[in-house]
Image (cartoon, one colour):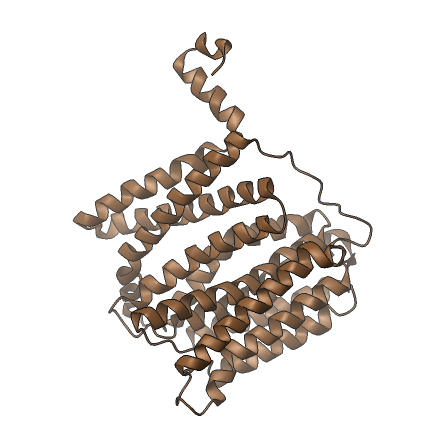
Length: 374
């Protein structure tokens, strides 16, 4: 604190410190509010309390991703990408495991449903919306084909190995991997994601930049003080998310099952919650004619969802001896194959229009409807 700060009233001093930290007040306050909300869970929430706790949980997720982005910007690549991906994965895994350990219903397939929902939301919902909005505002949009092709190639391999192949192995019947097979797939998923991050951030970074140069601009580098506060608040936010998810898990499952909805709807909610900040960022980039940034955010999120979430959930499943069903049903396999096929075609020319966006959004609408009415 400087001499000038000593001369200011306490309220002005606080505003001055917040200005120097360059962190929004909501991102600092929500994680602390999350911990306070966790304490109230010891006495039960009630209906109003459950709604309030859910809102606080969503706010903590947004705050955690915001602080992870600040830390990621400070440490640079490739570590910045890993910081953000690991933070999002902790949130997603905590939500999945909390629900898997509850006894409101059979949640052994929740990890599968969440990962599949994330893929469908990204490939059809986010990308479709970005292509449609970008096409309406800017006409034909262009992007670097090599980076998108590399991402789709990796995503297709990960999706089939984790969500389709379990149905066709014979060691363990049903949509399950044997222990050795699950370990192999977890290692392979982590390896492929690691190689992709290396290619994206080090070896071939130019593949993921616009053809006419990096038009995303360069935000000011956060200070050490800002980064330190962001990192500490990130830890608090992650703890709040994990504890709130555990407190709300049974209530959420009972509400979904009580409404007569399939448990897969919970996976859609989790995926939408975790992907909300990056979805908004991708949409804003598309409106500013930065479709390359939109595709980088969307496809990178899809790869992190499989490449980090599946290994983490597999480890938890093996350690806690929880059943883990990964194989998709026939209808969802068809939707997955269609989504990958359409994405390969629509993103296979380096140019996009509103038509590709409309096609993706139609597939997404069909996915949502068939999730509720299978």
